[in-house]
Length: 146
Image (cartoon, rainbow, N blue to C red; front, side, top):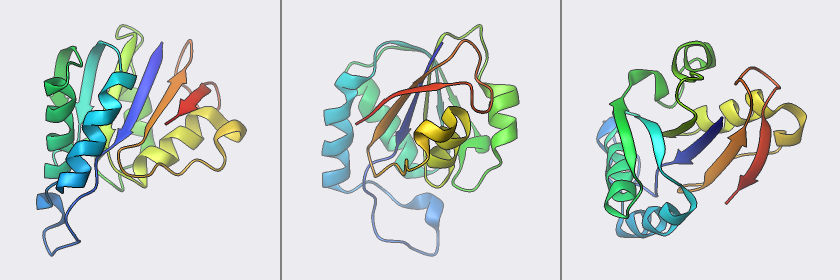
């Protein structure tokens, strides 16, 4: 199975309503340039925050084929990792993509890939690709971060 983790593009400065922050033009361009890194996916989980929703829309507009798109509250910035690992990362969906935020995505990468991902801290619009027979703590291989 493959798991792609994409942090949303650059967003407007922090406001009182963090979930409503939109992408900047730079953020939109950065996300569009990364679409080529992501193949067709079986399921895309997207944070309900505006900047993640916009990033997911851009990926699809740029040609990323998605069978199922699910907006999910379990992939917001400070969520627990256990529900993601236990409930979202399923073996019947061999290629999955999560479009969300830090610190969540960097923590998830380090948790799944263990020591080889120790220093990973995804920047805006960065994508990590992991591979595993089953996504359990320390059992994934970090293939790349771009």
